[in-house]
Image (cartoon, rainbow, N blue to C red; front, side, top):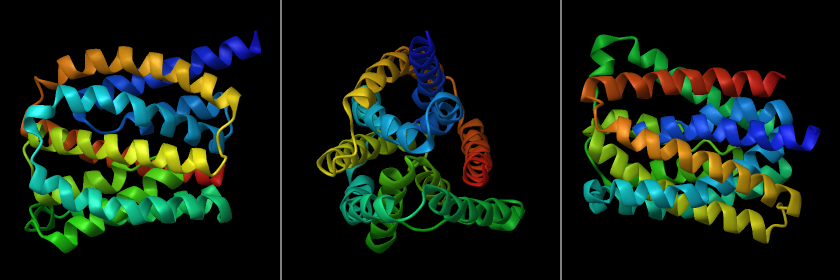
Length: 246
């Protein structure tokens, strides 16, 4: 009975995450993780979430394929590779709470900047070094604490992309980073048969949620999209802090 409850909670958590991720292209892991950590330890919850992200993003990338701007994406993907390698290596030697506090501090600094109307309008021009750096940080966070949407959300806000462009670019990045992170973690021997079974339950819930979320996303305006991203970043900072100290 206890095992069945674990599967139900994992599937429900990722169904909620799938709705948010499908509608906005970001935030699925952050929504799912609080529920997953009710029945799994943080390390297992991260691995299950990485497994789901690697497979569920195929659906998102297909749904938003028309809006992908490849010149935006290539630098992110190139920078992602060393970031993923560093994240997997760090996951083996550093406590997860330490990594979560580091990322939480980064989010808090950005959110404080958004409190100033002048700084909130600040934008950065597209450039190869910036794209590579954003990809590296996102890759590191993806493979270490399964929350690549946090640094990528900051990058999207600084670039001021339209919602469809942001969702398209983020979906293909999540697809590539998710598959790469999962493969690296698998080759590192981090997955077990029990985690794979939990991943199947989580994926089933996620796909149901994403199908509904993609339909809802068509009705989100640019300003609403920006506010959702800021709310997501604030919530991610709180979640990371709570996870780290508990």
